[in-house]
Length: 276
Image: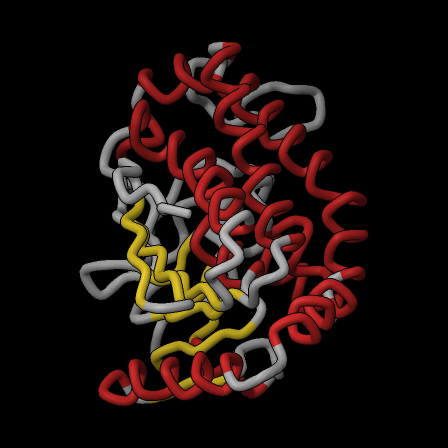
């Protein structure tokens, strides 16, 4: 089975029985950020159906895993128009669901290779992988609720972490840290998360590729059928959690965007809907 390589937001390469998916950080909304969610769902669906492949590596480019748009973009009327458009909203949020469902259900282990910052949706993608190898000082931050206070940027207004973090962080973090991660945009390095048992390996940058290759080769030495079914067993809790919370978190994020569209970009911080 031939694997498509012409996705606009990602590159896909195959070496033997290993596929590498490389995220190309999109710098525009339509055909960029909105398409990334959808494309990843398409890619993992395609890779799932190729029985010649056994392991997938998910990584980023230009020294990043994934970094969202610059902060100023979130005040752009283009964003508010796009997310309130039915077709745009459908593609964005259905893409989020398909991406995470495919990553969870695909029988091939997914190894996260994290060369640098994994922010916003990037942090959710890291948590969605089966094994995580990261540069020790790589920042892993969910910036949705950062309110412009985080050094990593993101919107100055609050958005529900609807692209996966709201579902996955409570599964992998201790409850109080999950809330700090999601509610306050708490900054973690890969080393911090390795000490918490969330990241498998936090390594110096010069050792990243060797460690990823070590993990990939170890997976390839396992029985293919037993490994595939072991992932399915191990991910039952992940699948349950996605069914429990992913639709709701994506829907609440959509409500946030509709509020911002109605208020012209102002942040409704009070329960009665008045802007502060």
